[in-house]
Amino acid sequence: MIRVMTDSTADLWQEYVEKRNLYVIAMHYRLGDNNYMATPDTASPCYMDDREFYRQMRAGVIAGTTQINQAQYEEAFGAVLAAGDDILYVAFSSGLTGSQNNARLAWDELKEKYPGRRMVMVDTKAASMGEGLAVWMVAEHFAAHPDISLDELADYAAVISMKVHHWFTVDDLKYLKRSGRVSGAAAAIGTVLNIKPVLHVDTEGHLIAVEKVQGRKKALRRILEQFEAHCADKQNGAIFIGHCDAEEDALALDEMIFQKTGRRATKIGGIGPVIGSHSGPGTLALFYVSEDER
Image 1 (cartoon, one colour):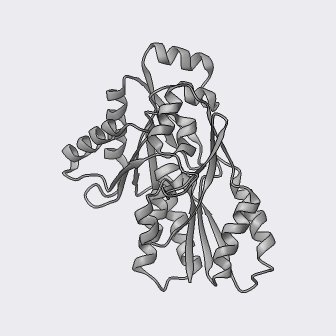
Image 2 (cartoon, rainbow, N blue to C red; image 1 turned 90 degrees about the horizontal axis):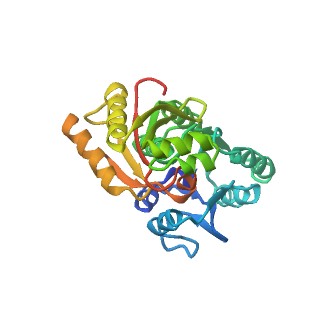
């Protein structure tokens, strides 16, 4: 049996995780002096409500993140391997974290203990619900083809991951400045001029600023234009909209898509604290599949 694993940066919702029996490895983050666990399980004692997280960020509390360490991977992988399953780990972009190196070290420690088992890791070069959309596509493909081999499923994951487009904008440049994505001077000028960057994630999994526009509405229009130009299947393809406590804007973008295509997003969901720590409250993102690599 194959067990599909991913990490909490995928921003998947608990109902879907349970439906497809996914294993989500929790990443950790800091808010002020406190440590929390990013997990889709709202019953976890280490869980913090996203709205409270972003409320505190807006109030000036500093947030940060840590990589998944080797011990965490060994615990997670070991639990699946001990149950007799092979692992397809659909992982957060190596362009944004070094966690995959820890995953490899963990597998090196475990493979002799479980000689009959396998683990294949696919670097999605994706983040947030872009990574989540890749996992969703893999899980749905697996459900439709339960006899598929591990290598075949991994090949599908690698191909589809590179076709998932990410387009997003942020509300306040200071968070990108803090994470080193823009300079202090650019953030200060952008704030005064109400500049909203339109960004995407490239084929190496890095955040790239494509355009700087004046005002939130113009940024949303630019994101919609990218969707119109590149979405492979506007009528039936999966469309995810993610936001950092910006539901009103997420619904507005959904309405814009509806006016163009006559359909609604497959999922509108929250972007969790791990990604939100770096992009900040007010981030809005659109994810879909293209015929071509992003």
